[in-house]
Length: 109
Image (cartoon, rainbow, N blue to C red):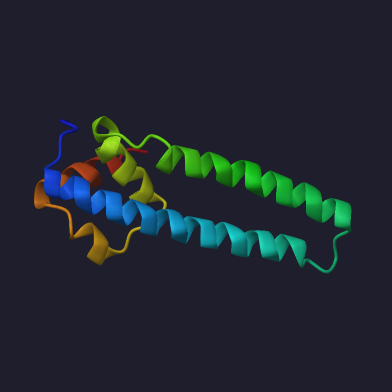
């Protein structure tokens, strides 16, 4: 599977990448708030759970967003898509060829 995508798709990705990262960060912050506000846990338990959450979610951010290069763009779009951070409408902004490549990548377990 070739990793090249049209220039237009690269520009779309640069825009949507920011939107997807914001969505993921919002989700993480909501999860963190739930950990902090859990009434039955001690402060230390809340801290430990929050630390574990941030560690795990930092890995998610790294996997989907830290390798911002044209040579990895199909993989990045696929990962972000698998994370549920793109809407169907946003995915349709990519060319049919790029959409096909992303679907192929996203279908890999």
